[in-house]
Image (cartoon, rainbow, N blue to C red; front, side):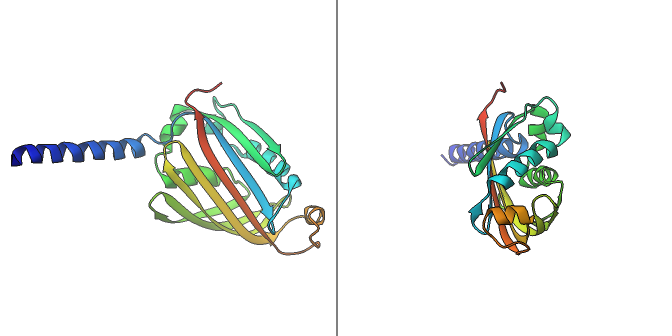
Amino acid sequence: MQKRFLVKTLAGSMLMLGVMVQAHAGGLVPGSWRSDYRVQINGKDSTVVMNQFANQVAKAMPNDLRTGAKVSVSTIGNQGSATVCMTPVVAGALTSPRLVFNKFAKMNPRCTLISGELVGDTVSFTGRCDDPFTYTGNVSGTVRVPNSWTWWANMQGVGRFPDAILTGLQIPAQTLVTMKTTMSSTLTSKTCP
């Protein structure tokens, strides 16, 4: 009886270990991924910022995501989205929250982002963005990878936007503002169009 219990316990432990290793070693699932994002200034949405951000996402896509990938960026109202066909090579290299953070940092080339503590599936970060066309100021945030088919990022800070954007939002020019961006990225299909 004890021997059977021990064998079942060991088999169960090995199965759980295998599931955990597979989830982390396999990285993100290759296929078509959609990222939805939103940018707010002092709690207000800005279509102008969304359009500029959408263009930056397309231009800042790292080469390994561009290779063999279809990138499309669109904005509707105050939210934007980008679709990427992630190859097996790229997906297989993103095997941890810290590696996903590194890719996220490359997707923000006008920001210097420094990873902080890793707690569970979440990496915190701090940094600074210097973009004369959108935001200039300090930032902090998190990148979270709860599973192989989803990851999220948020970033906030206090800094400056160009006066034309502030005026469009009825915020006085030269005002320090609070910026907040949120992004969720989800696998939509294991195949690419």
